[in-house]
Image (cartoon, rainbow, N blue to C red; front, top):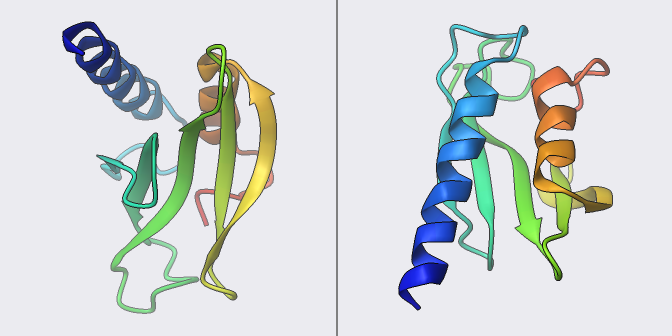
Amino acid sequence: PAMAARVFDLDHRRIVQVLAGRSRYKYVHPRVVSAAEGAGWQVFSPNCSRNVDAAGGEIPIAWFEPVEDGRWRLLARDHVSACWVVHAEDLTLPQALALVREDPAREFWV
């Protein structure tokens, strides 16, 4: 249990550190929290573009969900339907983080 907690904390720090290195919205400070729906981490960010929240409030944008054998599922928030949708599966954590950090199609940082 103690080892699992340390790995859990390490994953959190890795996610926060990688997201800080993005080029889009680099002055926005996302919040990474333990997922309410289950395992993993959800990322919330102020909606500076105001495309989703006209007031620029905080919105959920990504969910890193561990699945098995060190693999991860990446979910994106469908803001119109107010639900999570699978964006990619069977990823390493660095692969999942790169998809959210780079986000050339603006699927996460809306």
